[in-house]
Length: 289
Image (tube, rainbow, N blue to C red; front, side, top):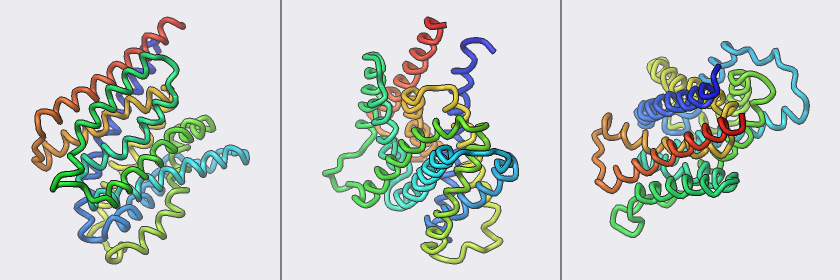
């Protein structure tokens, strides 16, 4: 594999993961009127865990106490991120929810930065994020509970990145995600099932639930773990700034959500930050090789 291949492969994994997870979130919102966000998360996490366990068979790993600790925190962050985000987008638009949630990875990228150039890319991404958000003082102000839930999900997202990179050293990315998703399911499923607006054990919703589980969890988190093993925490976090841009574009193409010129400009700023971070990472790898 050439020097460029690891970074390019990681970027490709992240792009596919983001497109999958936004498609899955759009489908998941269609389940909200049936089982609510809690029931949707319970189905998504539990089905994803079963799929990943069958594919990767992580019981073959032998983990130390310290490794189990990282796995449990990683799984808790993974589960918390999902349930908090689904309850958030019940109250606020999907694209705005993703933008608010991204404050977690952005702060992680900022605190992990070691060079002035890295701060430029993070600042550019933050500026783009600010332009994407609506005026909180206007008549269209966001639901404050939804905003708080999205920000809390962002904190879990930062934990997912931080502890995911450490948990990912104990085995293959797929095995790590399988264990993490199982940990998440153990405490998220009871909460989600209890808060569901109706019974989640209905055969008619199983096909949609499986689709959501694959697109929103099993596929993207496996791909993200592959990327985490090839990128630094800081560059992974900045690259994930594409997430709100993908959400905004998905809203335009699928839900016909129109964006102002300033918001499209903001998306361009975020993409520029991601590209700049990727190129900087590749340049440093080339220089130090």
